[in-house]
Image (cartoon, rainbow, N blue to C red; front, side):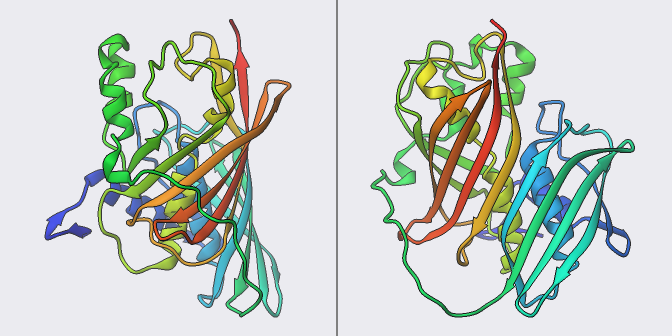
Length: 295
C-alpha cells in the first residue's frame, strides 16, 4: 500500500497506480479499467498512461521509453473497460518501437506509438529553467476553484472539487474564470503526486504522461479572454507527444512550463518543458487540441 510519512496516501492515487498496472489478457493484449474523475468521459491522461504501460510490458527492462506520439480519436466511457493491443513494430540493437491501439466497444478510441532505447552516454545540453515562485507559496488549483464554486452548477462544482491523484499549483495571476482577462499564451504549473510512490522508473513515466494532459491545451485560450467554462466552448485533446530526457520522480515537485505559439482553424498548439525543482530539464511535451467556440 502506498504510504506517505506512515499514513496511507490518497485513495485516488493508489487507484490510479493500480489502473496503470493493467490486466494481461493474452500476449500483447491488456485490459484496463477507468477512474471516474466526475467528467463522464475518460480523462485523456489516463489513456496515455495505460497505453504506455501496455507498451512497456512488451519491452526488455533495460530499454526505457524516451518518446511517444499519440492521437485521441473518440471519447472513452468510464463505465466500460478499455482493451489495449500492442504491436511489436521493431526490436533493433539499441531501439525498440511499439504501437498501441486502445479499443472500447469494438471501436478504436486512441492510438500511440512509443520508442524505447538502451541507456547510453552522449552529448548533453539543456535550456535553463525559468524563474518561478516556490510551489509551497502558491494555492492549489482546487483552492482557486473553491473561491468560485458557488457560481458553478452543482454537478460541475462536485467535478471541479473532486479529489485528484496530482496536486497542481499554477504560477499565474488569480482571476475570475468566468471573466478572464486576455493575456499572453504562457503559463507555468507545479505538479506532484499526492503521495510517495515506489522506486519504479516506468511508473513515474506513466504518471507524468497522465499529469501532462492537465492544464495543457487550455493555455491556447489565454489570449482570447475565454476559458473552458465560457458558454459555448468545446475543448478537447487531438494528439499528444512526450519526450523523456532523463530520470525523475513525480512524487517530487516538477514545473511544467507551457506556451502556445499558434491557434488557427479551431485548433490550438501548445508545447511544454518539465523541470525538476533543482533545474534539470527531464521531459518535453506537445499537444494540439480542438478549440471550438459555438457562441
